[in-house]
Image (cartoon, rainbow, N blue to C red; front, side, top):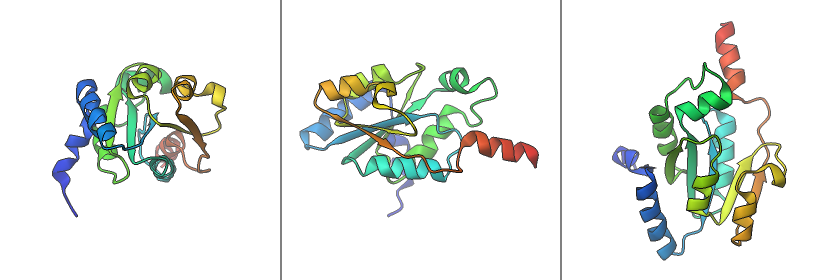
Length: 163
């Protein structure tokens, strides 16, 4: 079913997400949370988001703001602004909610959401994952999904620049 008008409704502010979380919890939905910059969406992102969505009924994506992305990735990033990145993420079937965060890490957002499952893609250890300790202390679990080799936003940008 094509319902493009729901795309902006999947982009939340903190208050809106808190209300929606209460609704989902009243319906006994399990919540997964993942985060990232998602600057230029590629196959690796889709695989990671798909894996994360399989972990729970609902997938919430924390999206680094433009300022946060610049601090993490450098002054030339992001390529796409936060509204564009949020819209692309919200258009994906596997994503139920997108929320932009300003901090360098999503720790405060994770504490607010307190997901049943915290999902991170990559070569992280449990000790390196922001929010893992808090989620596990609340009875949740942490999942580390493998990255898809050969796909990265930095690699795409480098390839485009060489054209």
